[in-house]
Structures are given as structure tokens and as C-alpha cells.
Length: 376
Image 1 (cartoon, rainbow, N blue to C red):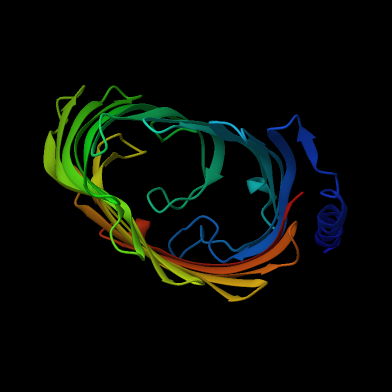
Image 2: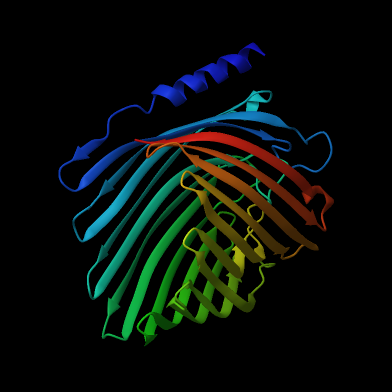
């Protein structure tokens, strides 16, 4: 009990004083902010384990100090750099305590004919997942990418890009991988606000155990403002995957789609819908997984200083080479109280459930969280 009280006192002191540093302007076009959050959550299944000795509950204190640099305020090139450190302390199971870094940047250039977006990130993660439950999975994830588009005429434009990602696992039993992706797209405006698209995305995946995959996603789609209240983008097509590096590696092909829509129900309420279907690789063996997911969310401003949100996600995973299919459901509700321009209080409840042909992969999980966020 003493260490719990001590930690709560420290957390309270941090939340009240650490972010009172002044705002800093760097020249005319850059602004530096101090950011952070301090919170506590209760998790009744911290490892997403099935019922049994590995199913543990705990309270977790979390402190996330960070910085945010916004630049290009009055120029054609605009961007953001963020860095943070997440410190998590478990009240009963301190063997899971972590201190994890996160760094990210993005920059955009846009004029009448050309637009270019770049991004990159590095995240240290140590958490359970629906695909690798029953343990805490420590990994580092790096990403880097650039996407550009050039308008040939008022109605026609072409886009191209390159992205790289690297996942490294810091414990035995999991297989890292490198992924390279090159999307090529052509757009044709059928109205001033809606474009049709046709494209090809090539993705190369090199798994650390020697497996490799080449994916060709041939697709058509659309983007823009479909109605005054409905905006978004989507593509649908055929994904052709060839595998190498193992006698048991199998080729795959099939229908794939990716997209997201936003519906402005009222000036205060917005709904979002996302859908994805495609191939990924197993963290344990590197073998192919067929993924299908749908998510529906909503956010509303119920008062000038109150926001509420809710969402539900369904994901199905078919594991190649195993007689196993998982069905994962996650629901969340939350609320945010805006104290002022610098501080807000956030509360949420999350329910997770995974059903599977493998009994060891089934779990249920409830998480209740409360935190204070700051940006100064």
C-alpha cells in the first residue's frame, strides 16, 4: 500500500506542475509545445490470457512526457515533430514495468500542381496483442515513407510513393520482418470534388526466418466529397501474393479492399467507418494471415467543454497452415472534459473478446482508464 500511495502522490505532483513551462516560439514559423499525460487504468487481463493461472489483473500508472514542434506555419512546407517517453508502472506485477520511447515526424508540401507528404516514426512497444496473447510482446517498429502527386490537368493527376517498415522483436518466439511498398495511382476527376482512381501497389516482405513475399494489389477506387456530408476514400481490387524461401511457403490471391469514410451527421456529431481486407504475416512463424476488419466510430460534442466517443471493431484472422480462425471484437466508450486550451481530462472503457479454434487464443478483457492530458 505504501508504494501505491507514493506513486499516486508523485503522479499528482507531475500532473499539476511539470507542464507549466511557457510556450516557445522559434522564429516566425515554428512553435514548440510541451505535451504529456498522466493517468491510471485498471486492466482485468493484462496479458489477454485465457482463463487460468496466466490471467492476471492490475492497476497501471502511466506518465507520458513529450514535446511537439510545429513548423512551416506560413510557408508551403508544413510539418510536425513529436517525441515522448511512456513510463508504465504496474502496482502488483512490477516485472511488467516499462519505459518506452516514441518519435515521429511528418511534413507536407502543396501547391496548385504538386503535393508531397513525408513521414517517419520509431516506436518501442511492449504489450499484448490479439494475435499473440498470453504474454507481453516487446518489439521496436520503425517506418519511413514519402507520397507525391502531380496534376497533369484540371481533371487528371498521377501519384507515386515509397514506404518502408521494420519490426524487430526483442524476445524469442517471434519473427521480425522488413516491408517495402511502392504505390502507383492515376486519378480522374468526375466532379470538382470526386476523383476515380486506378492503381497498382507492389509490396515486398522479407521475414527474418527466410520467408519472402511479393504482393501485387491491382485496384480501382474513388476519393473526395461524395455528398456534402460524406467524405473519404476507398479502393477495391485483386491481391496476388507469391511466396518463397521455404518448401512449405504457399502462394495466395484474392479480393482485397481498403477504405475509410467520414459522415458529418450534424455540426457536433461525426461518424467514421473503416474497412480492410488483405494479407499480413504471422509474428510467430512469418506465414500468411488473411485479415478482414471493419470498424465504426462516432464522436459528438455534447456541451462546449464535453466530448463523447464510442466505437466498435470486428477483425477476423485466418492462419495459413493452421486449422485456426480468430474472431476479435473490441468496443469502446469514452468522454473528454476540456478544462481549458491546455488541459483536458479523459475517461474510457474498453471491452475486448477473442474467439478462436485454438482454445489458448481465446480471451476476454475489460479496461477502465482515467487520465489528464496537457499541451502547453
